[in-house]
Structures are given as C-alpha cells and as structure tokens.
Image 1: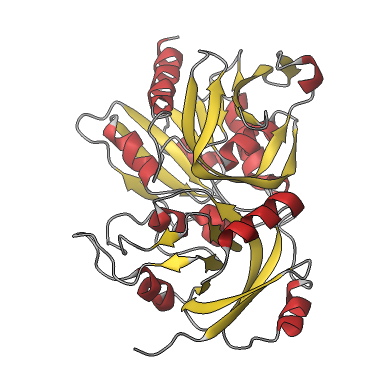
Image 2: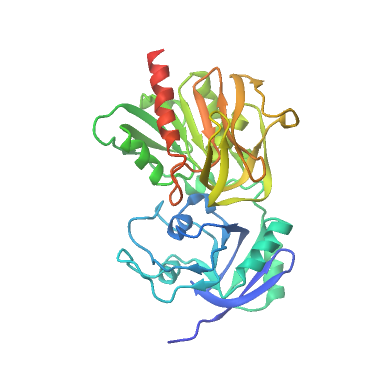
Length: 377
C-alpha cells in the first residue's frame, strides 16, 4: 500500500500541526471549528451549515462505519476541510458502500489525519474559532499561513445563496395530508421535511430567494425556516420575508439559522460565539416545561437578548411580546424564542437530530399544535 502524502495544518495565529493527507490532495482554507459528536460524521459532512468551515472531529476514531447511500443530509459534502486523528482503515457496517476517505476524495474535500485533535480542540476553545489552512501539496507552513491570514472571516459572510435549492420541490405527506407548510431552504437538512411529512404535512421546500407571493401561492398552514451557514446579520431578504409572514399571522417554526432570523425580525441583535456549539450532546433547558434535553447543535452565532441581566422576562416587539423559551445549560446562550401574542416560535438547535438524540422531536408536534390552534381560532 502506498504511504499517504504528508500534510500540514496552519491556524491563523501560526499554530501548526503536521500529519498525513486524508481525502483529496490539495489545499483549502476555511474557519476552524470542532464537533464533539462521536458518531454521525456522514450527516455532519453533508450539513450545509458547515459551508466554508474546516471541521475538527474531537472523537479520535472516525470512519469506522464507512459511507452509505442513505444517510446524507443534502446533495453533497459541504465542509471546506476535514481533520481527524485516527481514520478507520477498514469500515465495518453492512450498509457501507465506500470508505470515508474515498468519499472525501471523490468530492474534492481536502483533509488531514494523524493530528492531535485534542490539542487542536483545546487551542480553539481557548483562542476561539479562527481561519485555518490545510495543504497536502506543500508542507511550507509559512506560505500557507500567508494565505490563511488573507481569508475572509465568518463574521459578515453571506452564504445562504450558495447552499439553497435552485428550484422548489415538494415532499408529500405520509398518509393523509393534514397541513401544508412552506419551508424556506436556508441550508435545509433532508431529515427535516422527512419528519414533517411523517406527521401528515405536505412540505413545499422553497429557495431562500422566495418572495411572500411565492410563500402564499402554496396556501400554507405554516411557514418553516431552516438551518443554514454564515452570519445572520447578512440575511436581509429572509429577515424581511419573515417579517411579512409574522404580519400575516401565519404560524412559524424556525430552527438554528431560522431562530436567528426570528430574533432579527423581532428587532434583536445577533453575535458570534467564541467557538460555537457543534455536536450531539449539548444540554438545553426548556423554560416552558423545566425539562432538560440533550440536543444536536451546529451554530457559531446566537441571538442577543436585551434583558439578560434581569433574567429572561418578556420584551415588547413590533409583533407582540417575545420570550426566551430555551437556554443552553453550558453557557446560558439563548436556544429558543417564542411570541406570546402571535403563532411563532423557534429553537437554535436541531430537533431533526440527524444524527443525534431525539429528545427534541416533540417540537415538530408543537408546530402542529400551533397550526391547529390558529386554524381553529
């Protein structure tokens, strides 16, 4: 067997790691982030929210179940680069069709293995997410560092148009159709419309550029905004579209980017987290029930709540009173919002949990309850 090529990883602050090429041979630059999931790397790789990010897997052994043809969350791998410590030499799963390394190579994703990912993760936790470069065509760390320092930061990045669907499509309801939902694709994961459809919802997935006329044309009982990449402060069109949805009292449910867009539509700010939440083991408390959930996350930005020094009491907005419904127990980051005087709510994490725990699946049922209440009003 041919020995793998050498590769080098250089962070924006000059910290350098050396290892072996993994995946495609080449050079890449992006924002370095770490994911604490011990499983589900295929879903992570195909999550559009990771656009222009180099993902460091904290679990040391990656690739042991290979790649199958069923678990992808979108049409392609979106990560800008992939960093692992010990890639599996031979996948062990009856569903595997190819190795992870082969998939990365086929899709042109530059990666590096043999890296001390524990040290790299601790560095990012202490210094914060930053730009990084990986090269398996040259091991000149200084030359790569120069390119890394010229790369644009994630703050201010407008990436939604790069990942949204180019054409509208329909995911039919399973069994009897109970509701119709217009889902705005800001970087949607396939499991989301699947779970909605399983609950009797016909899902019309629409491009991020859709207008209020496009939304109304499907005669929706509710509107859904998906997860997605980039800085929510740049999402001017989706924010204005949501404001028009709220003004018409159409029931709304948003996740991840959709939570940040709701915050901005209500007049709240958003800010970049030091290193974000990425993984499938984040504890979140539902303030409406007192229940603690273990949840799946992938976000580097969060909603700024104006009254945090006074707790999470309701604030007045153009669309009525708004409250915080969920918080992260690790750092008190806002993880959910709701309007008290209008049918709208959102969460910052991923209740579709692909992959991850299913503690938050009830939120899809809550969306149905909101639509039922508005229809019966």
